[in-house]
Amino acid sequence: MSEDRRVAIVTGASRGIGRSIAKQLATDGFLVVAVARNADALNELVSEVQSAGGHAEGRPCDLMDDAAVDGLIEGVVEGHGRLDVLVNNAGVTRDGLVLRMSDDDFDTVIATNLRAVFRLCRAVARPMMRQRWGRIINIGSVVGMMGNPGQANYAAAKAGLIGMTRSIGKELGGKGITANVVAPGWIDTDMTAALPEAMLKEATARLPLRRLGQSQDIADGVSFLASDRASYITGHVLTIDGGMLS
Image 1 (cartoon, one colour):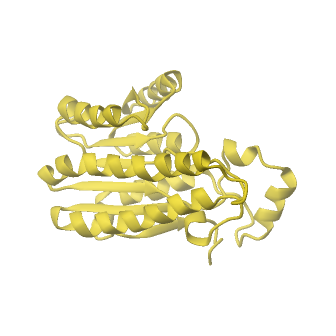
Image 2: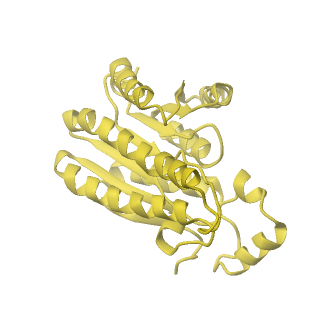
């Protein structure tokens, strides 16, 4: 099935932004390999995609397990004969002011949001180089560009992600592989829904578009960067933030 159908891996695909990205890429015609730790949520996503006429499979994986990550990529390439798109969406937060932030909270966020992304990018580089076509799309955050009180660890990881992605783009561009970052701003997800209403009102009031973004807004940006239409874009940071940084 996938000999003539491009294959896309989406991490953190069980909910929120990752789920929307996975469904959009399936709509675009990709065979989507949805990755997360929650097998039940992945099965539900796969069923939704297949019911809509798309192609998807779920592969539970703990991205903090190096052997599991290597096995994930090897299994996809062996099973489908190709690997065209990697969307690194999975991430965590462990917020706290610098004076109170523990070493463990700092290290966990860096390991999940930066080191795991590096290992996945490295793992997909070789199969993409062999086919001389590939798209690496890393989901960052405007926090990595502007900083945010209480998120020194998260900001460091997302800022590092930008530099890493641009370096990867320079290294692999000659092989037909692009590497870009999508940096969301305030997006309506489970995470923002848990914030105090007053905080959300204040945040949206400062946005030129006066509203939170939707996960589909991010999925649309990823869809474009994963397509042939974006073949001359690499090392770019696409902010989808309602004008937050303008």
